[in-house]
Length: 70
Image 1 (cartoon, rainbow, N blue to C red):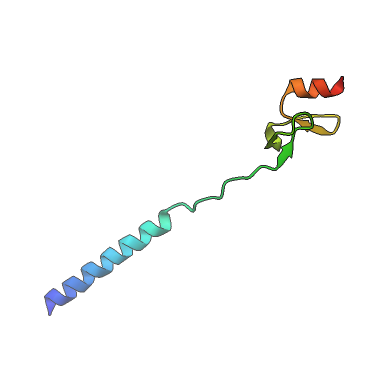
Image 2: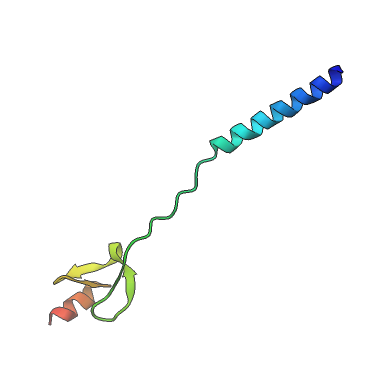
């Protein structure tokens, strides 16, 4: 009888340890998705954070922004 109680106690301890490890794992955050914009000069799509703005339009590089001004 004591062996059975000992076995049950071990199973409970293993279960509690496993459950505590599951709670401590950090939740996986979803990657932040940046809005995509289109270059007004060449038409390439790029994230809005990486684009260059000029005259209310988006450009992929300074050269395309300057070429649009001419």
